[in-house]
Amino acid sequence: MHPSVSPTASSAAPKSISAGRAARKLQARALSANTLRAYTRALARFRSWLDGAEPSDASLSDYLASLHAAGQAPATIALVHSAVRYADRKAGTTVAGPQSETTLAGIRREGRGRGRGQAAGLTWSRTDAIQALLRPVSLQALRDAALVAVMSDAIMSDAMLRASEAVAVQVQDITTEPDGTGRLTVHQSKTDQEGAGAVLYLGAPTLQRVRAWLTQAGIQDGPVFRSVRKGGRTVGLALTARSVSRIIQRIAGPLDVTGRVSSHSFRVGSTQSLVERGATLTETQLAGRWKSARMPAHYARGQLAGRGAMARLRYGA
Image (cartoon, rainbow, N blue to C red; front, side):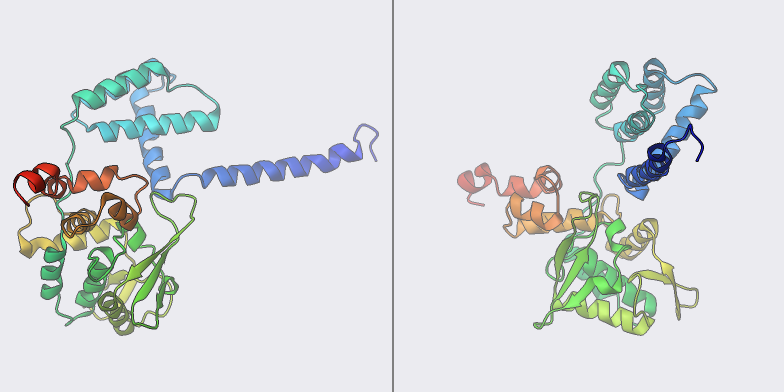
């Protein structure tokens, strides 16, 4: 053995390297894949804007102000700031500081009216109308009917899934109960990054639609919701969140919905329908798996106003 190398030192080095790799792997899992991609794009655009200059709190502040001047929404600009803060934590730097924080606060105040606005709500009655249009005459229609049922309607399903959750559903995540209803296990979500998971109720009609799609498509394992190849006779890869939005926009087209339709329209509409039927904000929050009642209160503000003290006590609503 070389005299300058002790047994303790030689055995400690590989352990330290291994521990460092394990820590980096766990750190990479701290954010969802979608968030990491968004941060990567935001940081790349910031570096391009710097044009070789060193990043600083002042330059970040100027960059955020330039995005605001270009008409971007506060939420989009805030993502840039979050991306830089994330990069700071990883690298041990302090680019994002008080100056950019103050600039961002001003952007949020001045740009409150910007952005695409809330997605139009596809309530239960509208979901029923969509289902009536989706006659099961093709693989695509069977898939769309199952997708709509699982994502939206608490009469048929209490899942209220986000698009990212819907495309992640696997065959083994859906089970059948003795009474003909189903249960759906959601392993991870936007508000559950640690993966604690949730078990959600599927009504019997929803489960029947899902089973009809799986049977006709010949899907026995893997992703439930997949593309239907040209010609409509075979299935392809799992849908993406973006393709789910396109499907929802297509099938909601005949309803002439006022406002912007997206995959989030089912969560908005189901929230509104729950409140209309008498659900409390706490019950609605639990159904939609929000961390607080703020978002369901925002989505159903019109319905809540109709059930408020003035409506009930002054007008007997």
